[in-house]
Image 1: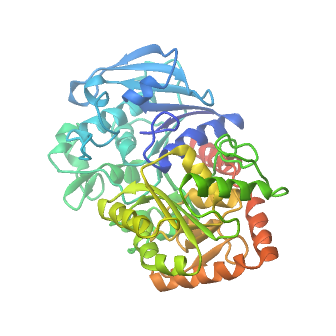
Image 2: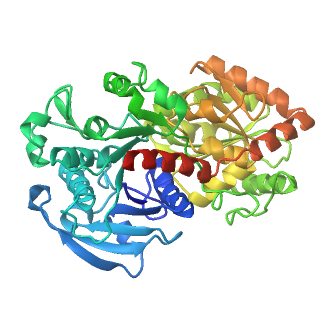
Image 3: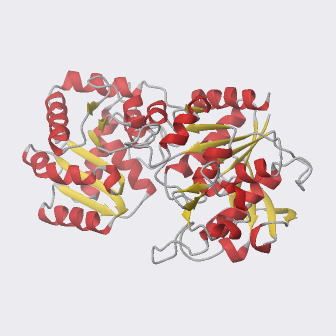
Length: 473
């Protein structure tokens, strides 16, 4: 079965969040179980710099704005998955990130940029219109940046089925109604039964309305987004399409995230041989100027610093953690107020708090490996990956009961779960965790229980395969 997987980012080439981790790993897992899955990415500078031996395949015309693009083909550098790269220099080869400029402002032509990308995906998936000899039987779209592709297919009368995966419903690709002409959609599509969203154009709404089936990244999140609290204004449409919506839990790359083979760690360890975890802890304490101590409860935090992630809840109880003898190691970047607050926390508690503002892939592995506990009090979390990494590394997570966190952490067995996103509820979970940490036998039992859970991509890939086959049939 032939699948075109359209995404705006995929590690290791380009990453701003969890979408890149999924896009880098799921196509490879699908190929391992026998599917011919191929990636489509925009030709950002980082993508073009990260590949070798790219070959031109064809030119694509008929794109919005009169754009003509070149399609390159190359293997993904880490796993060999076939990759198509849409090269349109005037749209994608610019300074800054995939969606924002160097000052952190959205690119003003994002509607055109991702309309062109979506239309290219639709053309490549079309019967008769595609210039490729390889024809996908299904188009798998991801998040708002590809949301117009199912609309282009359906409105052109194409029969190739499409699947839309929502990685985070909060990001919806909202643009003014005047951009309907920019993206070259017909006026009749601008309605409640179409791409209109509270008077604006929504790329995500287009995908949710026009795609044949919908998925999101955990079973609980699939239920939550049908309700007003987390439906982000889309709950009516999602409830109406409830029979077409399924939650498939994300996996993790067990080759990249495995404490027994992790190239980023100073010492390897496993569920059977845990001693190396203590050595990882001592080395991280040294590197981050934390007071050394094998038995000191070390709380890890790796997150985008945003209100969604509940970082303000951690700040509210940080003094309590430190008073109980704990240490905090944070890695993240995001909202300036939160960055400043964690910098101040670190400056006020030298040797007890390390706040690294930024992102470092190797350091993220070392924090996961060295920490005893991992704080993840997200107000909502479609799936979450860090709690899965934590479980795999014997780091006991403390999580809010939402989305994928609820689906993956078993309270009192592999971690600690609290049910209200408040400082008090989080603190009660931290207190339970500290009591358990003081009991070495109980703690090792929890560590090993988490490390024995299987979060590899194969199970998820099989679920996608079943969904694909139903759609193609």
